[in-house]
Structure formats: C-alpha cells, structure tokens
Amino acid sequence: MKAQITIFIILGMIILGLLAFGMMYFVSEDATPAQPKTDGVSNYVISCLQAASTDALRTFGSHGAISVDDGGSQELDAANSVVNNGVIYAAYIVADPVFVIAGPPDISNAPINPTYLSPDHYPFTGFPYLGTTRVFKLPAAFGWPNVPQTNATAANSIEESLNRYVNKAMSACDLSVLAQQGVRATAQGDPDVRTLFTDSGVDFLLTWPLEVTDISGTATLSSFSQHHDAHLKQIMERVRLMIDAETTDIAYNISQQSGIFLTRLPDNQALVSVIDPLSRIGGKLYNLTFGIMNRAPVLYSIDKHRGLLEEPAYRFSQCEARLVGTEEALSVSGGACDIALDLSIHVQDPDEWQRAIVQYSPQNFAGNPLVMAPPGVFDYTLTAQDTDPDAMPCLHLLVEAFDGRRNDGELLTLYNEEVQQCS
Image (cartoon, rainbow, N blue to C red):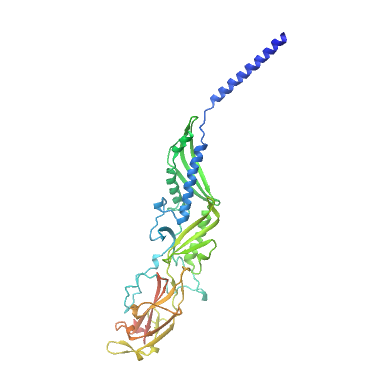
C-alpha cells in the first residue's frame, strides 16, 4: 500500500514538473519580440535591381554611352555621335576642329574656288617622317579621342550614367505587389545606387531604406547589391589604349585587333564592336559598340624645290610657254604643252577601311578635280584656257587627298620663267 502511494507521489511530481516547464517555455516565447519575415522583400528588391542594372549595362554596351534621353548623363549630338538606321552611337573618335580651314590658302593672284568647302588641314611644313616607311606619330592628329571616363567622381562618367539609369528604374519598382505575400513594404527614402567597377565585374550597391511590416511586427531593410560578370573596367582600359593609338599612329589599324568587329557605314563613318569572351550578362557574351567619325585622309608634305613662295613651285619653261602680247597672257607653242611631274605624293587614310584618292584641280581651281593616275603623277596637257591674264605667269594647282567626303590639300604653283613673277 505504501508502495502504491509512493508511485502516485512520484508521478504527480513528474506531471507538475512538466507543467512548470511548459509554462516557463511559453512565457519565454512570449517574451521574445516577433520579427517579420524580410527574405521575400529582399529577394523582390534584388530582382528589381538585377533587371534594372542588366538593362543599364546592355544599353551602355549597345550604344557606347547612355544618353540623357535614355536616362543617363551623356549628351549625344551631331558633334559626338554616329547614326545608323536611326540608332545613335557615341563616337569615341570625333573630328578635330583645329584641323579645319575655310578654303584654299590665301595667296596673291589665286582665285578662290567657292565650291572648295571646309577641307581638313594637317601641318604640311615639316610633317614628320620616320625613314622611308613614312610612319609617324602626332598627338591626336587623326581625330580626337572621346572615350567616356570610368572615374566615378568625374562628370558624365560611365558610373554616373549607370547610377542615374538604375535609380530611375528602381523608382518604378512596385512594392505594393508584396501585399500578396501578406507583407507591406514602405519606402522611407529614394533609392540610391552606386556602381563599382572591379577586377571581377560590375557591382551595383543599392541603399534604399524600407519599412517592412507583417502580422509578426515591423523591421527595416536598407542595403542590397547585385553583381554582373561584365568586365567593363578591363574593356574600357583596352578601348582607351586602342583609341589613343588610332588617333596618334597612322599605321595602327583598329579593325585588325583581336575581338574587334568593324562595320563601315555609308557615310565613311564606322561602328566598332568589342567582344570580351570573359564578360557575360544573362548567359550571353557582353558586347560594347561605339562609333568612329569620318576622318580626312593625310596628304604628306609634297617633296618639292621651294622658291621665294610659301607654296611649292615647279617650272614648266621646258614646255616652251612664253609671255606674249599686251595682256601678258600665256601663249603655248603649238597650242598645247604636256606637263608631266612626279610629285612624290604619298597619302594615307586613318580610316583604313576606306580608300583615299589623289586629285588635283587645274585651271586655277576653276576646273573640276581630276584623279591622278597613277597616284602621285601629275600628267596634264596645258592650254591657253588654263591661264588667266591676272594670274600670269603662274598656274596654281590644288592637290588633294580625298576619301569621298573629306579632303586634305596642298597648293602647288607652276611658273613659266622666274618664280619671283608669281609673288
């Protein structure tokens, strides 16, 4: 009997212990504040950041810049862009206005041809050669580099454009859809994105203070990030080196570099696409495409014997041309005179993907330009119609390198007897 009482006492004590433990457990649970589940909110915001940053990188890669019209910071206009089929591309090489003159050189007795518009002028006198290969370098002689900066603190940098684009897109991220999950997310400020170029790609760091509330309570979120395997840092470093070489070295050909695809446009401009095999977005290779504006061909300083004039002068007295009559007009014995001069002309075009020709304008610029064939040989039959009484006894000849749109020219003078007569 006593044994049974003892068993009941022990069982009672066990039950009381379990009840006490249970009460303590529930009291402890009630003492811990409930936390709302923020994973769903964080994942949703990151999905918005991923879509916005992907779109930003693709927009930049497709055009070489993000224009103000597209939400970026780059002003694209006719002076710094290339247009193809209505699509605007940033020109990483633009025309340098320093090398533009209004017309032929202003010399005495040389009539001005009004149709000779805005030729490009390179420094003829002393234009540097290196040996017989005629390879030379000058600072930005062949266009002007216009590659956007990758310095986050620089105005109109690539980072600034990406930041603006993503911030605008994130402002459209609809937080109200989270209500379907029983969560309310309220923005406590505007999204602020900072783009960071690293050796491994591009990081988008988003600061966006959000208040998250559900049945469990309230919490805050503010920091989000997204990484892309687009190696823009390395791509832009390579592009900058290529553009520097293309604008300073006439022998450099950007279209022959590895991973480069060049598309020639009808107006002698070009699009260049850079393919980086290590850069991918959404499982696809990342491309960067930019434009190159048409640059004038280079007419090397013509080998010549200089007289008292600033322009080159050649004597054609061997043609038996002589001064006769009161008007001091040029009379040609036999009615014609064949002038053949090897002018040692050398032309190169910095836009290697197009062909430049050499042409000359006879009749003191009054005639239509004629193509030299073969290049560098002036072979022309001189008649009395090529001269003008006011210009005698000189015949001014304009030699040009021409790519179909832009020119580089130098003035030559053919004289009869004494070069002083041409002054």
